[in-house]
Image (cartoon, rainbow, N blue to C red; front, side, top):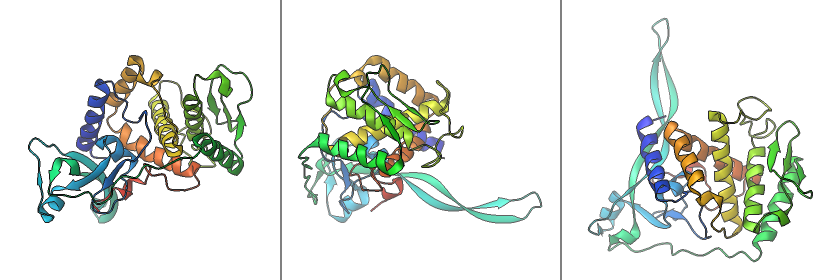
Length: 296
């Protein structure tokens, strides 16, 4: 993985967090960033990087449409994976070719920062008749399809996923200050459950959970956080300020990302897989495979 690109992306997210902003926790619902050429949403990772809805365009596209940037406008990187053929030499001196994915990036600009460039895809706010009902439908469909044991009708002081029991435990909804936090918690634990060996097989230690405080634990927590945030947005539940806006929460994730600049790249891709798995491979507007974020 290209360490320079990873550092570039991580530094950009940390800069937002230093302003008190959690890139993956948006207190509203709506549309995300889309390609000016295709109208398709960018990947989860690129949504985090861009941090702003609207159409985004490359400099070549601006020139092709005879537009130009407004004074002081700044671009933003978006990443994509490119298949590259490399030559490897074995111990006998013989060369073989191998195709490996390499992380690359290019720069895009928001159409709002351009002149003589018209918006092709006006944003349409996705309406949700009953966000809570949609959330319940997703939970029910997932646990029934996967056979996950869901325990949520008992008073509890903790929420967790047990890989050994393949069980999700969350407190009763009445124990939460609002519905948004309840469903965010439920989706968080559901995202963890996708890592089970019978599903996406994400846990490094087989069927067990990673040790608290380890790199694997931090990465898995980030996967679940990203997954939950996207599922909440998918059903249209509006979130409010919570513990995620606290200084302690921000500082904890800044430390994690600074210690491992590659973590957000890996976690975002796995979070997308988790979300799509939960939805039964249904398309989630802000959640597309990373390879979807091409130059299109």
